[in-house]
Image (cartoon, rainbow, N blue to C red; front, top):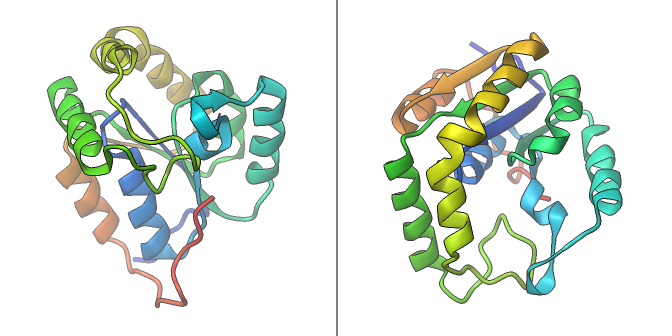
Length: 181
């Protein structure tokens, strides 16, 4: 079966695998990938203003197709309104922590591909706390927003389930790969 969506949000806890999954989806279906972390952060872990971020986001949302990963809960309603569907990686907290620690180890001192240049990967107690409290503090609001949107939502509790779903569609023929913003 052909993949029926042109604009897909990928949501989930930190370390759940959102960026990796979005990149795979982009490659498989030749969709541009928008990493919200690249829109929000400036070199040296400085963030853009809300107005700057919103302008970049609005531009990205106007594109005819994309896979967009990241939570940025404040902007979820506008992103859902523009999306055709959403994938929620509802991965257990311990698995997310393991994923975040593995990412830190892999990219220690370097900027990962889905992050803004000049933001080397680092261990951060605040980020660990956010991962640990996501299920209690953020997840209920994200799930409510997804339900209210009326858009198709695909929720996976294991990365393998998400990958199997992705592989269940016919892939596009390679044309040089997907773009990443």
